[in-house]
Structures are given as C-alpha cells and as structure tokens.
Length: 394
Image 1: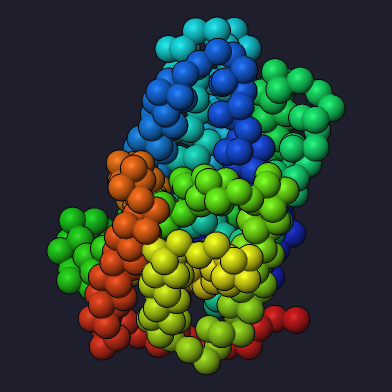
Image 2: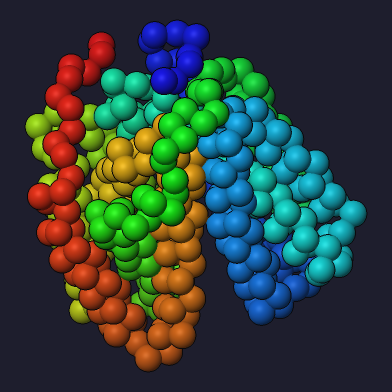
C-alpha cells in the first residue's frame, strides 16, 4: 500500500516537478547542439554525446528502478539523483573545451537526472491512487514547461551569448531539486510481495507483447523527432514556419492530455491504444507521401496528441497495472528506458541511415513499425482488463 500523508493528491507539488523536469529538456534539446558547435565540436562529436546520454539514461532508469523496489523509497532516490546530477553538470564549466570531459559530464548527469524520472512517475501514481487516470492532468504541466522553456530560451539566446546556456540549465536543475524537496510520500514497505519477481513477470505473454508494442511505437517516432525539422527545411520552410508547426503539435498534445481522464471513464486502455496506433500509422503514411502543403503538415502535427499524449498516458497506466507494488519501480523504468528512450534511440539511428534513401522510405518504415504495434495490440484485447470507472475529482 502507498504511504502518503494526504488522501487528496498534491497536484500542484507533483505538477511542479514535471514542469521543471520538462523545462530542462526544453532548454537542452534544441540548443545544446548549438552550444557544442559554438565550442568548436564536430557533428560526429555532437552525435557521440547524444548517444552517450541515451545509453546512460537507459542504464540509470533501470538502476534506480531496481533500487526503488528494494528500498521502497523512490522520493529519497529522486532527491539524491537530482542533487548528484546537478553536481556533475556543474563541472561542465571546467571541461567545456575537453571533449571527453563534456561526454562524461553529460552522460553522468543524464544517468542521474533522466534516469530518476521514472521513479517520480511511481510517486505520482501512488499519490493519485484511485484517481490514477488523472495522471495526464499532472503530466500536461510538463508539456507546458517544455514549450515555455523552448520559447523563452530561444528568445533569451538572442540577447545573451550561447555560452551562458549551461548557466541556464544549472538554474533549472536547482529549481527541479527544490520541487523534489517540497514533494512528499510515495514510499512503501520494501519486499511488499516477495513472491513477485521481475523475471517471472517478463515470462508472461501479455507483458512481452506490451513491451513490444510501446517499443515499436516509440521507434516509429524516431524519424519524426530526429528529422522532421530537416524535412521541412529541405522543402523551403523558414525557421519561423517550422517553429509554428512544432507549436501546433505541442498545443494539441496538451489538449489530448487534458481530455484523457474523461476518455478513460468510458474506454479501456487497449481500445485507446488501438485508436492511437491506428492514427500513428496514418500519420507516418501521410509523411511517407512527402506532403508539401501547409494544411497536410498541420494535420500531421494535430495527430501528435494521439500518437504521443494518449500512447504515453496509457503506457504509464498499463505498466502500473502489469507491474504491481513490489515491481512498480522497475516496471516504470522498463517503460521509460526500455520502451521510450531505447525505442526512440533506435528509431533515430535507423532514420539517420535511411534518410539518404529518401524521406518517403524512412517514414514508410516508421508506418510499418506502427502497424506491427497495432497488430500486436489486438492480442491484448482479451488479456487486458477494463480500467476502473470512477468520478473525476473536482
């Protein structure tokens, strides 16, 4: 049983953590490449840093998942992880001109900062309890943090030198640490059910199928995350137009997070997943036709709310269902690291090799991966239970 100090979920405290966690992503993902280029690093070296970050994120995610299940104290691990990540990242000021040093700093901080995020999902779900279907309402605040950070950082870097980017990121990490300390609860007694083992769970067909579905879904997004902006640039779109199209996706992402609790009152997890993956196939199939009109590209971006927001929300809840208390930490780690991070990493790497053969082929393969995920979802229909019906708190 979850041990939290309040029967009413602390939505504001939980949302604050997601806000600043995603704000760090918003300040780093679009602009860290520019910082490294300003330091004189090549594209190959930049790619090496990105790869190291992804690998260490996957490793850190499962490491903290294991510790969380063994100690029963995910919040203690979150606080510790963010503190260590902050200390490691601060070293970037001393190693900025040393490539190996930059790799070690980014990889090391990612191991702790990104690796611990799955355990805050555990804390959130334990607080929500019977209102777990309201998870998307908390998570959407993270998306708000991301888009505001992207916008604000971009405008700020028009005023100050790109060399100050690490200072901004360090400041956001400090704010994240504060939100980790103002949160509470989420712990359980370790060894809650000693009969449950991760190996035993991984032998269950429904678990293996679910892992494959979410891995393939994230893999199919790799070409989009890695090359959509390049796709637009190659077709003559300006930076402003590219930003507007990305904004369309984020706005609809927020809307779909917001309506998710209502949807879950009437539709099962697997049916929502089937709808989302069907639209994922449609999305990448349209991209495979290499559309050039604004309305077609806007339509593709509108679908992001289904292909990301709904899939992510349902994934968190399904892994919560498949991996009960004694395995919850490793279950969420498996979703965040093994399905999301690893799937996107493989997708981006594969799209990088395929891009020279054409955007059409690259996105066609993405559509095929999503189609396989959809086909696998049909196997879950008789296996996955309906979500509990409950009222949404006012």
